[in-house]
Image 1 (cartoon, rainbow over the protein chains, first blue to last red):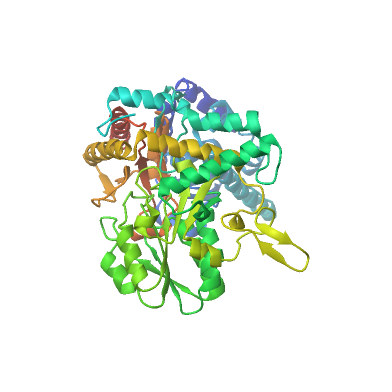
Image 2: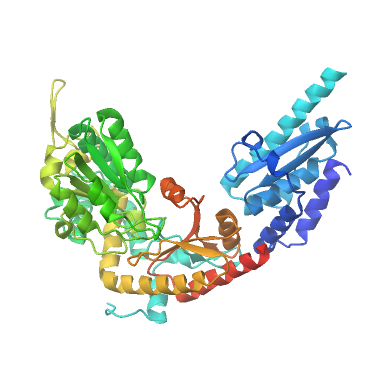
Length: 144
Length: 413
């Protein structure tokens, strides 16, 4: 699936919640629970995303020129939110990630259920993922 | 207006009508506001006072000779008189208007501790303090070489008074503790703390941020040297508060800020300072909020502190009983003397998640370290969920909180 197809899929899933805040929060946490377990050994200081109110760990790997992220958080809602990014970005090329327009955030009304502080944290996660994409792109181009 | 008895549902319903903000829905449900230790809501009398001031007699105070300035000055000074009565100060010269407790403490740290303490002197604070009753003293000690000692906190969230006695010595020059803890609700034995400090010749500052709306305050009976209050935690406006100081101490302290209002005469060679309390009130003050603060204190006095305390205690007992029965809950702060604050953690669920899930049901609580990181470190936790009650809260709201917590806990298991 293309990156935008994944975004559209998420938008359609959230539309079923009909704007109910409690259902939405529960759903986000459920998504977090389904996220692939991150090995404890990866939860290091180096892998912490700076600028998040909760603790968020993020690692990235390159397979066949595509990026694959793993993430975890000490809070369930943040873990659910980061799981959305992992789902959108995994299996995409560095260029696709760097050029991604994450319109799903606005479409699912994310600003309604994450406060100002979490918004900043979420922006930090996106930035960190794009930084990984940039680093891998540089590495791929250097290898050519 | 209301006798010294437990308020009925009708009494509370009438009280709630005075607080327009409570009458709204959040996320599709009636707002349940349980974040009163952070800031309390404002009765209509306070809101009206702000509107009346700006629509009727906004003017700069003290030096104007026109009618509006005279009215503004009179109402501003009326609040000082009310505050004097509210805390039973000896004179209005001992009532300094500040931006709130934080500024009051900074004023004393800057104009007293920094000036009169030297290397080798000690300041005693407690392990229950808010960052605003820690950092100003660290700043003062950074420049005068004095050091800070800390009264340890016992497992039940009360202060270890025996340890406090052991810390006191002739090196102790200042003791600064809160009247009640914002994080746990613990009410400290301030009279005993003050008397013990005075025995070694130390002055005492009491941080009254949490007590202002909930406990009787008599600065002369307490014999404290400084006492700080924030209006916004007492049903009053944000951005104003009081520093009480004993007159003899305030007189010997140098000004905190320089500017208009605080001077007697200024030349380029020399400035003489105004008398108390104006010496500490440089610049145009927060007139409107000070004016409205009078109505907040009047609201407390007319409702009756005993009536308020009885109702809030009833909520505390009820909430403690119900919340402690929930699976995996641990309550922090279980001392005998407590304000109406329930601070707790739930096994395996981060406080932020609980806070957000409660908000999804229209329930406002505070989550995190509550600006008391050393206290959280003491209990080896990142933070708690804190429900703090005020006069307008009800048992039904406690039930709503408990029901929402049950849903969260069941979902997470």
